[in-house]
Image (tube, rainbow, N blue to C red):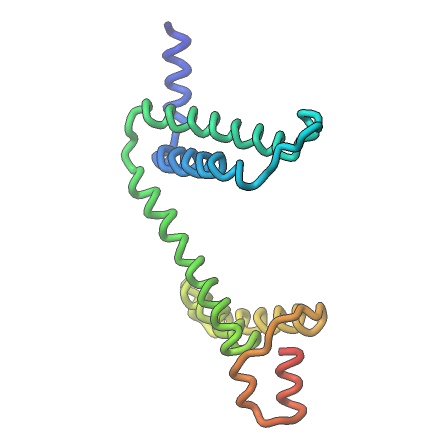
Amino acid sequence: MRRIQTLQDLFRRYRRPGDFVIAALSFGFALFLAASLPFQVDWVDRTGLFAQPAFWPAVSIALMVLFSAMHLIGALVSERIPGRLAEVVQWVKALEYVAWFIAYVLAVPILGYLPATLLFAIVLTLRLGYRGWRWIGAAALFAVVVVVLFRGLLQVKIPAGALYDLLPPGALRSLFMSYL
């Protein structure tokens, strides 16, 4: 009886408030994958079990369902720890940076790679609380280096921005559309 009490103390000590939310999300995702599996892989006639295209994905998803269900059951029967909502709020706050990235991806075809990268590097630097000119200059330098490295040296094909079409025809416009 003392050993069980010790194990319960061990689990209680290392459990986190947001454990239930993660357990529910992982179990829901595992069920989604299990429901999608028949539409994604095939069982082939006259093929060995281990050579079946669907065998290993089925095994991995079945284990994912099993272990996430065990995690969810453990989270359901464990005592409530205050702070679950606060932890989930922290996770949601991190989604702000997903929104920044989506805005950046949408801005590149309009503004162009260099202006969009400069703008977002500087705005995110300010958003993070770095207000001095040294930090803003470092962000701008970083943005220029990234653009020159990716578009100029590595020749990554990024579409030119619609803003570049407003430049007068000639060498400057060609430079911006090709390298910046």
